[in-house]
Image 1 (cartoon, one colour):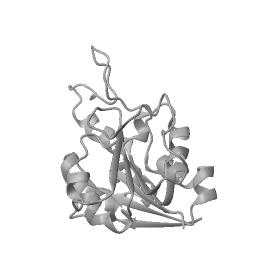
Image 2 (cartoon, rainbow, N blue to C red):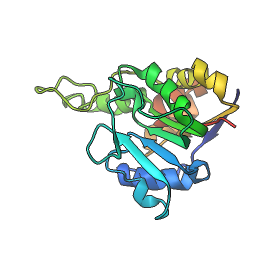
Image 3 (cartoon, rainbow, N blue to C red):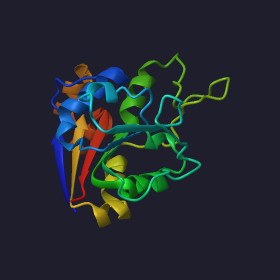
Image 4 (cartoon, one colour):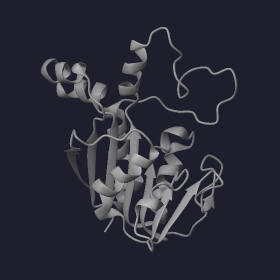
Length: 216
């Protein structure tokens, strides 16, 4: 499997799920082949950014999805190679069964698998600055059981190694392109560029890794 790395333009910034859907269409539209399965579709924000006749189905634990499924409790309820593109954005880090869920993406895909993973160290960097505030819903200790939690805490390099080294990806994908998304930047970003090695900089300032696997 050939592995490439690219940077997303620093002008590209999204703040919510709707803006992220527009970001996906703009940056990865060439890989959104019909039929498309959107795993973790939430309220199907991506569907409304696609052409009206686009062959799209969304899978999620929410009732807004076309296919309701909890990937920590079951496999994807579809046959092998059902969809040309399988998209799974900001989902895997919420699953205890992350390795099996990752393999399921490749089982149901024919041409492309698109995955995004957060760089948790980047998020934690900002949490540390708010030293007198709660740790946030993903990592804190809320008073009531949360519906939405991260199960894993990893940095850029760990996420990259996961994306590159999973056996199912190495077996089925011809190429993997990892796109580094930085998001909003502060003065510390520019200081980090000057002072840190690439390894340390990526671990602290890459916001999200977007991975595109080409299977054919």
